[in-house]
Image (tube, rainbow, N blue to C red; front, side):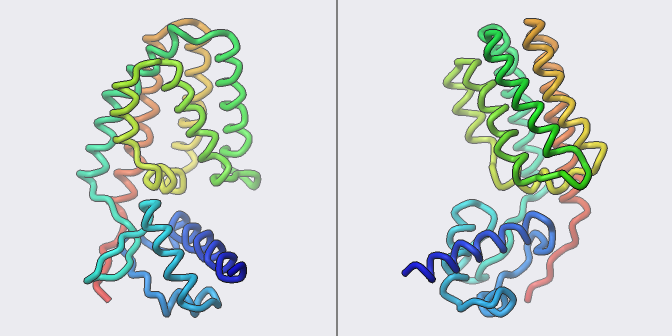
Length: 224
């Protein structure tokens, strides 16, 4: 069993990377035979990998169309970010009221590490940036202590969309995003919820612009 599991994990990692870096475009067909040949494996680990990636939301599985790279319409993306804009700034403002000096230090450390791995250049590591970013936002939600708003936000945020989001950032958008995290920490230290909410709102609109541009520019996929 071990070789099959190892092959499946390798295929999952390879196909995920090809989706996130754009080599497999949204809507592209994922044929088992073609992927098996491309990756030098049998069809079994490819089938297992596509099932895993389907559960992650990166692949759409259909009895009639087979497997394809997941797509989001402009309308769906705008709806997701509308919800984030309504919920996350409010949670961030609530977090300021309960944050201690130790909490601010924790957030500052996350923001510092995001700068280390996220700034454009040879050291940039977007795979390392994703969990750090998630930890930063999750910590603010935890500090807010508002279960209903947190539950609503969790339903709105789609991890696959966030993963692809980072790969769509140009240099300016990435630098703005990283600077927002640092400024939110400054607002937390200042005990200023209005400032924190304003920065989080700008942060979400920056991400929204990136994803709307990406979906607008993506080519239409032909049936194959």
